[in-house]
Image 1: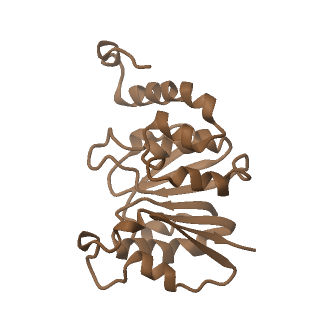
Image 2: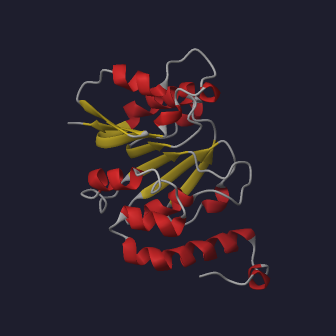
Length: 213
């Protein structure tokens, strides 16, 4: 369901975003307990990659808790009007949770209700120091090996016991364009990583780490 463009022109960009939010909520209402079906109205590719099916297995028992969820990488590039497909999906699946998103570009147009965005680099320790008490972290950011590893080393200590740290699109870690400096490939890093009281799960394109008791 969409509004005619002539009507949308009567509203500010923020008002248009709120209208889009509520229009997406209509079909999403029927799929709140099925993350893969919920992904479709929001247009996130997490369904196409098979991530939503995996997330459903891990998140279904905690979806009604009050969580703090951080997603790295909002999408849409430099255009402040684009992106946020999965970011807008999470509040519908987690009805009581706070959803935080970070991106190197300004995505504050998406700030509404339980969504809050922050502009900064995922490898900037000072920027990341403001985030704490996190229950789920999803890295769908630059996919550059050094950024992924740097983010993990800074943010994993901030993840609560019983939480999940997810790294998406690990299949690209061996590509030259994602290897900028002298860091190991993301997938190799996690295969060699030793963590106390944690379980590292490997899937096609996805690493999911459970921070155990």
